[in-house]
Image (tube, rainbow, N blue to C red; front, top):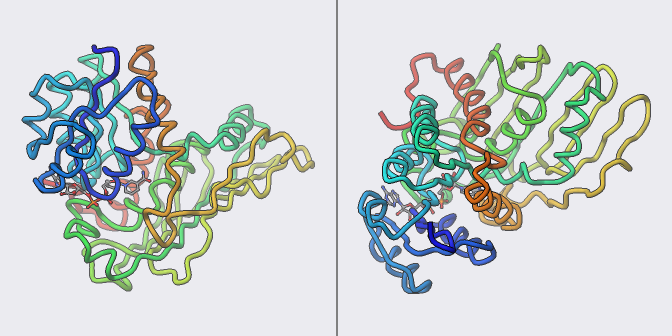
Length: 344
Ligand SMILES: NC(=O)c1ccc[n+]([C@@H]2O[C@H](COP(=O)([O-])OP(=O)(O)OC[C@H]3O[C@@H](n4cnc5c(N)ncnc54)[C@H](O)[C@@H]3O)[C@@H](O)[C@H]2O)c1
């Protein structure tokens, strides 16, 4: 491996360009090549960076110019393109969701494990320090036995947002509000409360947009630890509401608004003073997907680079990202038993 990790970014759209900017702040890595099916986009980004442009992920992966791929294409392509990278011995950072199809993700995790490759996912909210501290308290059972673990994601996406690219809201490439917008919050919920054992009820509908998949969803979850909870997600809320997570245990409770801890207590006391650092997240992305800070993305990318160097599991490894994909899959399968998620 070269001194600096040589990164190839696949997908030079909105998020790919944000990642290209992000890599400038990551120590020990540089973007050496970019790839997009749209040749003009690939050439534009490559020229800006002095990098090599490709239009084929396969050719880029085989080029010998790279140590790792950063995959920022539509969600239904992540695992397939990841597998191309893994078969060429490239480490992988995949945008969220890690993919839409859990069987493809399992195959990718197995391939990476067999080859000793690092696989990470851009679920950047897991880097928020206050969340980690709350998680430590939950794991230490300070909140007692968890009873109720719920999340509410009531956002707005316009008709123009969905019509801006054919993949948005399409089952094979994006799925709906749960897989695209709510996945960060579902992931935080599963990270804090543990995996979902069973989905007891799910109502998914396409209510207010001309798309294939759901823009309004409600599901009742039973977690592996026995707690119950609901997830409500919509891209129809205008104006949008703050994103909320609520966890109630027999000995305490915690609530986050837009990932800021607003309530946190156990043993009958307010414990917010325990938190060394409050998250400052004004809830960017609720109405405009690109109104987000890149600070947490950079932390995930930096951790990815260090995990490769130190040969350790990254903060959000493929294995860890799989937990919320599993919950997502169970919700979709409860609502639509015969559904095929992702590309066939
Ligand atoms: N982590 C976050 O906060 C966050 C925020 C927004 C989007 N995302 C994720 O990023 C991904 C991309 O979203 P976006 O908004 O940038 O989409 P986009 O449509 O703006 O960009 C996708 C790009 O991929 C290219 N592409 C499509 N198929 C390709 C192929 N087979 N080979 C090479 N290039 C191909 C397209 O030409 C386009 O340039 C999605 O998975 C989305 O969920 C993550």
